[in-house]
Image (tube, rainbow, N blue to C red; front, top):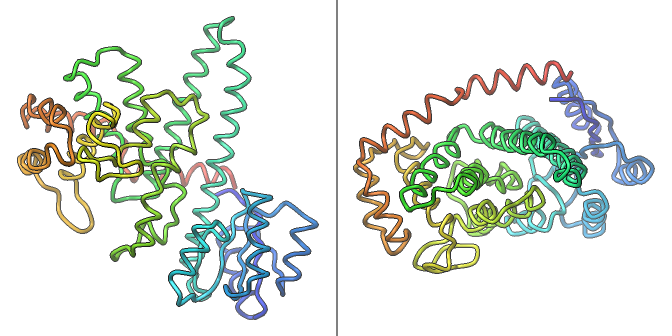
Amino acid sequence: MNRKKVLVSGENEKIRNQLARFLSDQAIDVETASSFSEVRNRLLSSNDFSLIVVSLDPYDVLNMQFLQSLKTTNNRLGIILLSKIQNTELAITLLKEGTVDHIASRDNLAGIFSAIKNEFNKIELIEKNESYLRSLRKQKSEEQKNITRAQYLEEIYDATLENLITALDLRDVETFGHSRIVAKYSQVLAEILGIKEKNALDNIRKGALLHDVGKIAIPDSILKKPSSLSSQEWEKIKLHPSLGFGLIKEIRLVKEVGNIILYHHERFDGTGYPKRLKKENIPLEARIFALADALDAITSHRPYRKERDFKVAKKEILDNSGTQFSPDIVEAFCSLSLERWGKIRFETTKLMHSFKDILDLQKTLNEKGN
């Protein structure tokens, strides 16, 4: 990762210096502060820190309010709170309200590094997105004058899309390639249902690729939790469609793309989220995607179970017709043989880079950046 400045604070000199040395060994630019008052002074006089790692009592209302005010004035600043919070409700509140971005134990160096890496990735994504938006606004005024510039804009859009998808893939090994497979399934289902227009099919593809982009804003402590999620953690997970819609709504967000991102967890019977839409009130592209998403999930390996075959997937989809899935989408799915669906999956996956190739590429780019 590129070197970014991190401020480490804590009154315990031994722990503070141990953490600073560890992070320096990971090619992270570190400065230290011996007290929170020093942190306040440093931050008020300088804005060149990307991240602060601070050891504080989470019940210290004044200091928590100061952290929250920092986030209000500088939403790029990442804050990692070092604390063994026993009160889960308090921890969720601090994360939900945006007072801090991550909470880690002081002695969990790997966890602290993981949180820092996640924050750096988020900053880089924001910078790439902002760079793209600046280019988009500049080029839009010239689209009617120069078709070449319009094509160039499309290339930038696709590159940004690929960057976002790669970032999501790198964050979750277990679902690597999922978005690309469900994008293909969605396009096939759309064509069966009579959608033939090239732009509409491409927008469905893009929406499917970006459907889980909102998970970038979900902490690793929740997203990668090996055990069952608490009700509060599950509520945070359920925010990702709205978070994803908000994250990219300015990137030429056409209707089909936005509908898939925002409504891909709605259910035909009205029990889904975030809007609890029912039947045909759910946009067609979102109903298409819901079945494509389930088809891949059932036939893919997950940490908690082995992959299942397309025969099992078909039975589960039929069993949930009219509840989870729209019956007309189920009918479109059943119009193709299971062998054909298997071939579509094979043809899609063989074109993808392996997860190792992606990691090697990221390592090479990081080494060049350093």
